[in-house]
Amino acid sequence: MTLLHHLEEIFQLVVQYGILLLECAGVVVLLTTAVKSIIDWLKKSPHVRLNLAEGISLALAFKMGGEVLRTVIVREWEELVTLGAIMLLRAAMTLIIHWEIKEEKEHLSEAAEEARLEALKQGLVLDSAPNPEADKTGILP
Image 1 (cartoon, rainbow, N blue to C red):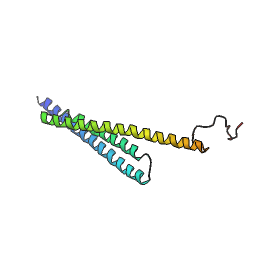
Image 2 (cartoon, rainbow, N blue to C red):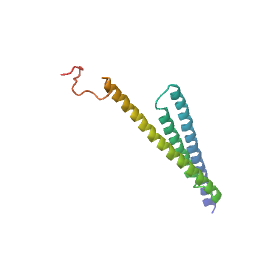
Image 3 (cartoon, rainbow, N blue to C red):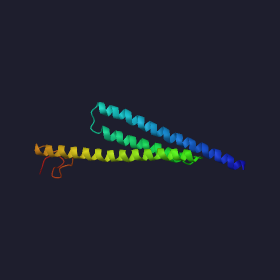
Image 4 (cartoon, rainbow, N blue to C red):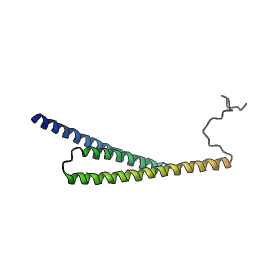
Protein backbone atom coordinates (compact mmCIF):
# COMPACT_ATOMS: atom_id res chain seq x y z
CA MET A 1 0.00 0.00 0.00
CA THR A 2 2.82 2.45 0.71
CA LEU A 3 4.32 1.80 -2.72
CA LEU A 4 1.02 2.77 -4.34
CA HIS A 5 0.87 5.88 -2.17
CA HIS A 6 4.41 6.90 -3.21
CA LEU A 7 3.62 6.30 -6.88
CA GLU A 8 0.52 8.49 -6.56
CA GLU A 9 2.58 11.29 -4.98
CA ILE A 10 5.15 11.05 -7.77
CA PHE A 11 2.38 11.11 -10.36
CA GLN A 12 0.83 14.20 -8.72
CA LEU A 13 4.21 15.95 -8.71
CA VAL A 14 4.88 15.13 -12.38
CA VAL A 15 1.44 16.39 -13.39
CA GLN A 16 1.83 19.59 -11.36
CA TYR A 17 5.20 20.32 -12.97
CA GLY A 18 3.71 19.58 -16.39
CA ILE A 19 0.89 22.04 -15.71
CA LEU A 20 3.39 24.65 -14.56
CA LEU A 21 5.52 24.10 -17.68
CA LEU A 22 2.55 24.46 -20.04
CA GLU A 23 1.19 27.53 -18.23
CA CYS A 24 4.62 29.20 -18.27
CA ALA A 25 5.07 28.40 -21.97
CA GLY A 26 1.71 30.06 -22.67
CA VAL A 27 2.69 33.17 -20.73
CA VAL A 28 6.08 33.40 -22.48
CA VAL A 29 4.47 33.02 -25.92
CA LEU A 30 1.86 35.66 -25.08
CA LEU A 31 4.41 38.17 -23.75
CA THR A 32 6.76 37.59 -26.69
CA THR A 33 3.91 38.03 -29.14
CA ALA A 34 2.78 41.22 -27.40
CA VAL A 35 6.26 42.78 -27.57
CA LYS A 36 6.71 41.79 -31.24
CA SER A 37 3.25 43.13 -32.08
CA ILE A 38 3.93 46.47 -30.40
CA ILE A 39 7.17 46.78 -32.38
CA ASP A 40 5.39 45.82 -35.62
CA TRP A 41 2.58 48.28 -34.83
CA LEU A 42 5.13 51.08 -34.37
CA LYS A 43 6.68 50.10 -37.71
CA LYS A 44 3.16 50.19 -39.28
CA SER A 45 3.39 46.56 -40.42
CA PRO A 46 0.26 45.41 -42.27
CA HIS A 47 0.50 41.96 -40.66
CA VAL A 48 0.42 43.08 -37.02
CA ARG A 49 -3.14 41.88 -36.39
CA LEU A 50 -2.52 38.51 -37.99
CA ASN A 51 0.72 37.93 -36.06
CA LEU A 52 -0.91 38.99 -32.80
CA ALA A 53 -3.90 36.69 -33.34
CA GLU A 54 -1.66 33.73 -34.21
CA GLY A 55 0.47 34.33 -31.11
CA ILE A 56 -2.58 34.56 -28.86
CA SER A 57 -3.92 31.35 -30.40
CA LEU A 58 -0.66 29.53 -29.67
CA ALA A 59 -0.57 30.87 -26.10
CA LEU A 60 -4.15 29.70 -25.57
CA ALA A 61 -3.24 26.26 -26.86
CA PHE A 62 -0.51 25.96 -24.22
CA LYS A 63 -2.87 27.22 -21.52
CA MET A 64 -5.56 24.79 -22.67
CA GLY A 65 -3.02 21.95 -22.48
CA GLY A 66 -2.36 22.89 -18.87
CA GLU A 67 -6.09 22.81 -18.13
CA VAL A 68 -6.49 19.39 -19.75
CA LEU A 69 -3.59 18.08 -17.69
CA ARG A 70 -5.13 19.61 -14.58
CA THR A 71 -8.24 17.44 -15.06
CA VAL A 72 -6.09 14.42 -14.20
CA ILE A 73 -5.60 15.54 -10.59
CA VAL A 74 -9.02 17.07 -9.86
CA ARG A 75 -10.61 15.39 -6.85
CA GLU A 76 -13.89 17.27 -6.27
CA TRP A 77 -16.88 18.06 -8.50
CA GLU A 78 -16.69 21.79 -7.75
CA GLU A 79 -13.14 21.91 -9.07
CA LEU A 80 -14.16 19.93 -12.15
CA VAL A 81 -17.07 22.27 -12.91
CA THR A 82 -14.83 25.33 -12.51
CA LEU A 83 -12.17 23.73 -14.68
CA GLY A 84 -14.79 22.83 -17.30
CA ALA A 85 -16.05 26.42 -17.40
CA ILE A 86 -12.50 27.73 -17.83
CA MET A 87 -11.88 25.24 -20.64
CA LEU A 88 -15.12 26.23 -22.39
CA LEU A 89 -14.20 29.91 -22.22
CA ARG A 90 -10.72 29.25 -23.57
CA ALA A 91 -12.13 27.05 -26.34
CA ALA A 92 -14.59 29.81 -27.31
CA MET A 93 -11.78 32.35 -27.33
CA THR A 94 -9.71 30.03 -29.53
CA LEU A 95 -12.58 29.65 -32.02
CA ILE A 96 -13.06 33.42 -32.18
CA ILE A 97 -9.34 34.01 -32.67
CA HIS A 98 -9.16 31.38 -35.43
CA TRP A 99 -12.10 33.07 -37.16
CA GLU A 100 -10.27 36.42 -36.84
CA ILE A 101 -7.10 34.88 -38.31
CA LYS A 102 -9.08 33.53 -41.28
CA GLU A 103 -10.72 36.92 -41.86
CA GLU A 104 -7.42 38.78 -41.59
CA LYS A 105 -5.72 36.41 -44.06
CA GLU A 106 -8.57 36.92 -46.52
CA HIS A 107 -8.35 40.70 -46.06
CA LEU A 108 -4.58 40.70 -46.66
CA SER A 109 -5.01 38.45 -49.70
CA GLU A 110 -7.66 40.76 -51.16
CA ALA A 111 -5.48 43.82 -50.53
CA ALA A 112 -2.51 42.15 -52.25
CA GLU A 113 -4.68 41.20 -55.22
CA GLU A 114 -6.03 44.77 -55.48
CA ALA A 115 -2.48 46.13 -55.40
CA ARG A 116 -1.42 43.68 -58.10
CA LEU A 117 -4.37 44.62 -60.33
CA GLU A 118 -3.70 48.32 -59.81
CA ALA A 119 -0.05 47.81 -60.75
CA LEU A 120 -1.11 45.91 -63.87
CA LYS A 121 -3.38 48.81 -64.83
CA GLN A 122 -0.44 51.18 -64.50
CA GLY A 123 1.78 48.91 -66.59
CA LEU A 124 3.84 47.62 -63.68
CA VAL A 125 4.23 43.92 -63.01
CA LEU A 126 4.47 42.79 -59.39
CA ASP A 127 4.48 39.11 -60.25
CA SER A 128 7.50 37.48 -58.60
CA ALA A 129 7.42 34.46 -60.93
CA PRO A 130 10.42 34.35 -63.27
CA ASN A 131 9.86 35.05 -66.92
CA PRO A 132 10.26 31.71 -68.74
CA GLU A 133 11.20 33.47 -71.98
CA ALA A 134 14.14 35.33 -70.48
CA ASP A 135 17.51 33.66 -70.71
CA LYS A 136 20.25 33.79 -68.07
CA THR A 137 21.44 37.20 -69.25
CA GLY A 138 17.95 38.63 -68.89
CA ILE A 139 17.66 39.35 -72.60
CA LEU A 140 14.54 38.11 -74.30
CA PRO A 141 15.05 35.77 -77.32
